[in-house]
Length: 159
Image (tube, rainbow, N blue to C red; front, side, top):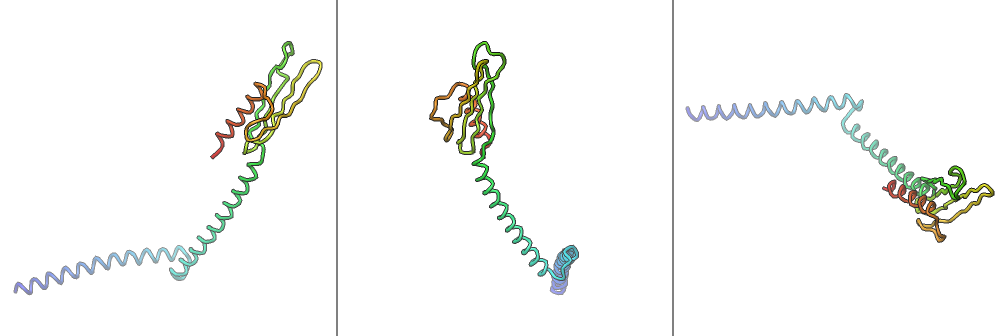
């Protein structure tokens, strides 16, 4: 009798295990059915292949965007950016800040500093080349100021 009770108990446990497995499988089948309904495809294989093609297309587009970004960065490195202008009074007795110095540098620190000195009788203009943030010509305090400001702005905007 004890053996019979043990066998019945074992059968009940096996049936309970099968019931739990069936419930889990039913849940997974419902999930797959919902997935196929959302995808408008006849089978999961078709859906997976279509998804793989979409992912590959996105990868190609991302590669194109990254190549475009590299080309744009190269072009921008050669463009003058963050120009700085400082106005000042170059000569005593001259009203207003009519003189100025302005620096135009590219991403490598190459460019020019333009200076205009104004006096009531005449005006002088100077251009001083800059390479890698340095000029071979002596710079006035105002010219050094605009150069320092441009180089500082360039360092802050660099990645």
